[in-house]
Amino acid sequence: EAGVAQSPRYKIIEKRQSVAFWCNPISGHATLYWYQQILGQGPKLLIQFQNNGVVDDSQLPKDRFSAERLKGVDSTLKIQPAKLEDSAVYLCASSLDRRSGEQYFGPGTRLTVT
Amino acid sequence: AQKITQTQPGMFVQEKEAVTLDCTYDTSDQSYGLFWYKQPSSGEMIFLIYQGSYDEQNATEGRYSLNFQKARKSANLVISASQLGDSAMYFCAMREGGNTGKLIFGQGTTLQVKP
Image (tube, rainbow over all chains, first blue to last red; front, side, top):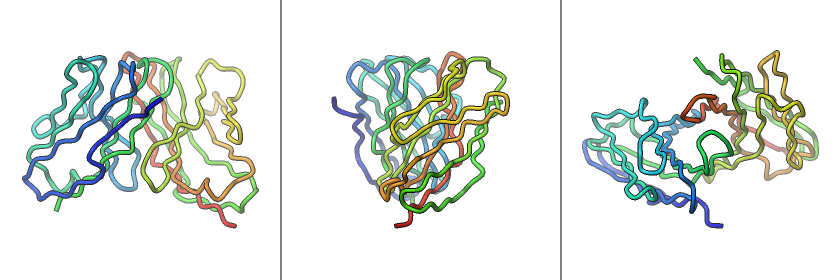
């Protein structure tokens, strides 16, 4: 079974530029999560989708971050404009059901904002 | 509010010995789940073990076991017979009992296994 796929793996941009990350969850997984992991900290949930609907985006900085999951499969996370403090690893995870079972994580995208 | 605390920023263990990584949690939910993940330097989060709040037996998965003490709100990870490949960051996480099921992570513990 293929795991969670993410691209790109690494991205370096200047502040005020925009960037987009892509995630393809495990086939059949209805729930998709985007986490932000700042160096030295645990991951923090940014947004959670159930199929193509948003379940939780309370921690998403909506003035600059946006995410979508068209057709309930792939998802993209966008930052526009980027700030220095957005430098982090962005992890995508998926699970069969949001109330049970483990979340499977992708390899992450390491973003550096200069 | 739900919170996970990992008080050991870094740990060392000799190869082939056992090591315990501490995790305490705070929640007012009756139903919740506790997870441990391993994050090697490559960055991917690898699921290790899960304990449900109503599970009476401590969870075990191969060399990993979870020492679940509900009254003390602790969920320590025990790794037996440490291997060099166990060197990584380890995160304790809690799934809320509510509608979202999102995970709340601790700060992590860096484990280094010495040959």
